[in-house]
Length: 249
Ligand code: SF4
Ligand code: SF4
Ligand code: SF4
Image (cartoon, rainbow, N blue to C red):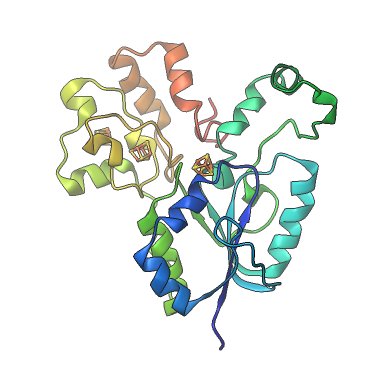
């Protein structure tokens, strides 16, 4: 087998997850020797035509053009990995689904009639088969490197799907919700960030999206005990993964 090729694609997103790839610095140098970075417009204007061995896809589908482009990306990609809350759950831009998209357009754009957009912001997996998903807003660099090194080693990546609480316990952190009454979505949020927010004495706000089989009802009771009313609880779930089925209350 020749040097495997890597392509990075952008859909509706802020580029923050692509920046995580650039943030890999030292590892990227080693990676550049092991894979041929064939398409990564955030880093280079050189584009080598597909097909590609691995595609990293950032962003959600929010326009008619993206509906057709994601099909072409899938056709050209042996392995397709979605990166970030936008690509895996629709992202913050999915908040449009709780409002009137036409009203948003008229408020934001001087000539909204020229804007072609869908009323929904959907994850990539709603349109094409996805091989692996990396959660977070943005993704965690260690998980990204795990997927890429696993691919090069010909093994399955190790991507646990438990809660942020398990990472808190593993790190020996004091629970901010139990000790200080700080609302925390960690008990229902997908692991992978290393319990970043609790490590800084903050509650988790759920940027990695729902874990596998979350007990939302039990957490809502706990959030009420922390003093949140129904509106505040709704707002807590309506962020980067608002339309993930488990968080969509
Ligand atoms: S998941 Fe967050 S960081 Fe990544 S592209 Fe979307 S908004 Fe940006
Ligand atoms: S701080 Fe949050 S994530 Fe950590 S153990 Fe407590 S509830 Fe779980
Ligand atoms: S603790 Fe929660 S909000 Fe903070 S980075 Fe991790 S998943 Fe995201």
